[in-house]
Image 1 (cartoon, one colour):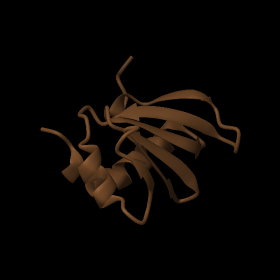
Image 2 (cartoon, rainbow, N blue to C red; image 1 turned 60 degrees about the horizontal axis):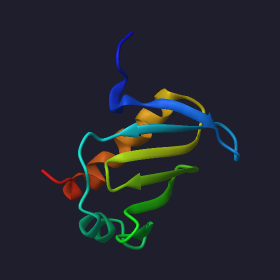
Image 3 (spheres, rainbow, N blue to C red; image 1 turned 60 degrees about the vertical axis):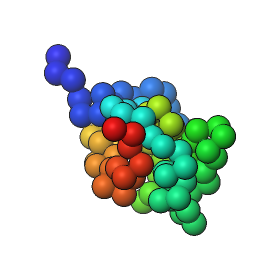
Length: 96
């Protein structure tokens, strides 16, 4: 069995329909930088280490650890596409 990009896995059904899919960028975030990048787009809490926003009808939650949850997708492949879409936006906040 091959490992999926971002180690994605469908975790559970989403109450709004579809699935909640969990993935991981593989590196943690600077929450200060992430919140600056997503200012005006996301609800973001440096203290809690979480940012949440909508993307193409789905809800995306990014955690300080690098974990990302995509709510309301129909498949793991769709979640991977959404994570691919947001990666270039948030990658400046990765901690090296």
